[in-house]
Amino acid sequence: MFDPSDPDQVSKLNKAVRASHRKLESFRKQRLDLIREFTGPYYGDNSVEEQPVNMLALTVDIYLMLLAGSNPQVILPCWRQELLPDIADLEAIVNRELGEMRFDKTLRRWVQEAIFCIGILKCGLVDGDYVELIPGEPMPAQNYFAEVVDFDDFVYDTDASSWERITFLGDRYQVDYDAVMQSDEFPRAAKASLKPYEMQDEEDRASHVGIEQGNDQQEESFIRKAYVWDICLPEEKLVITIADNPNASIPLKVVEWNGTTNSPYHVLRFLDVPGNAMPLAPGALLKSLNRTLNALYRKMVRQAERQKSLGLYRLGAQDDAKRVQEASDGDLIGITDPTNVQEVSFGGASQENLAFALQIRQTFGEVAGNIDALGGLGPQADTARQDAMLASTVSKKAAKMSLVVVDATVEVIKSLIHHIVNDPVRTYSTTRPIQGTSLEALAELSPGDRPFNLEDFRVEIQPYSMTYRSPSERAADLKGVFLELIFPMLPTLQQQGINVKLQSLFELLAKYLDLPEIYQLFEFTAPVMIGGDGEQPQQPQVSHRTYERVNRSGATSRGNAATMMQLASGGNPQQAQVAKLSQPTGV
Image (cartoon, rainbow, N blue to C red; front, side, top):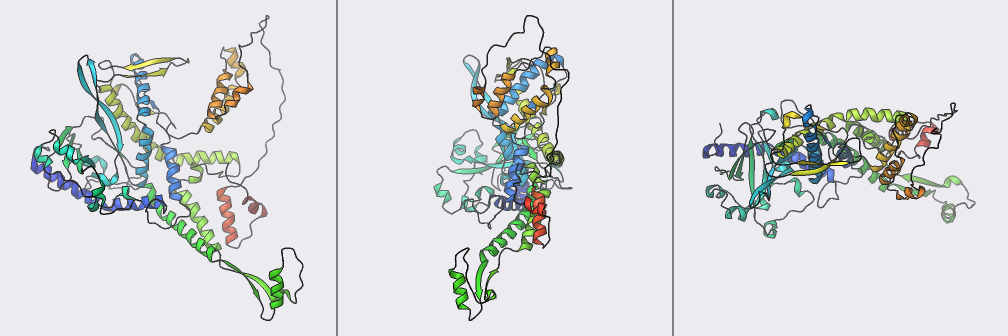
């Protein structure tokens, strides 16, 4: 059992933390190198080679829109009928809180960190405003926070072979040195170990990418800063704050951790490595291919710059050469011998290098999970039907990454719900729609009026709610549902007393397509009543329709790459394949 009041045990913990942080130096350097590759040569003072095609940045951007494009929509299935109204209120409040926190921004940073190395999200409570539950007796409220931890400031028990076996983990952060030294909240002996940090002595960090570092940075800072560590001991459920000093042996603060997990740190990792707690980053798998591809492009650029087209003439045929040089396009000139003057081209981009670069580009897309299809960069098959089938297959390949993000996000949301359910001060309120109507009801949870706990419901995330969908995609889905489902069933719906609100359809289309001119096409008036005989107009019993299906193959990125490689290797592709090179591959 760890005793935080024992200086010897705190000193041993401090040494173990610093030793593990040193062991993680190689991972920090690899992450820093990968971030430099991601940012390219035109990011501040970043000193990397020219990158004509930064496929790594493109892939990361597509991953983020796929995995963390928007706020997750929480669903709370409950099996206790008497709690359904309260759980519905809680569900609406949780979604409202996520929106106010701008959790989607935090989620994108968290996922991005996991792509480059490992994602660490620190969640907990921070002191907020005072709330008067009883007039004249203010009580301090606490607000929930979720912040991404920079891996440069993260540490964990590197002796553990898995995350389930670590004995400590924590993060380092800056505090106002003078404010801490003047505060009576911290023990004087603990404050003695706190020292202002010198920036010029700091190790190279990811936050320094693109920013030139000098020795005069400390003088430019108008607030003196110091580093402290928050170290969590999962088995003891303790969070200990100590100064970033090898001799620190007395904690600045000790807090009991009370949450849904063993620590305030939520870890996001995509590729586990057997026998190791540190995962393999997806970005690391693409780094070599990105460098190889850009090295080939740089070489071809240099070759193209050296390319020359020269006119050569045989000695003694100066007059013929002069006539050719002075002639305009389309002129007829007479020369003694056409072989006396020739145009010769030297250098130029190597066709073999071009074919190799196209092959590397294709391999990069495959290793990244068919990034062209994931990012919608163009049709990947000859027909729309085949392209839709391919997109369905690609979504299965990306399902693992999406599943990892969803599972980790659920744990974060559980911690948020735990805070909401157990908050003794704040009253949460919002509105929620009443199912089956266009009305909304007030959703409110007051202190002491929450007759449920986390065991009464499950926490789920609505499928695909975290994937970004543009307004045009929503409009296309809306039109598809109407044409393929609602319109064919319209007579049946009317017989059952279900009316379709076409006005709402046009309002949604005007909103999603940003096309308010739609309203100018219609005049919305009161509905026309049915005639006195009460009969509704009947559709003809027999109708004739002619369907004509035409298959037109289009240009694809993969097909064009194969044609280019065939041309580069001296092959003779079909004329139809060559013609597709001039066709756009975008949809």
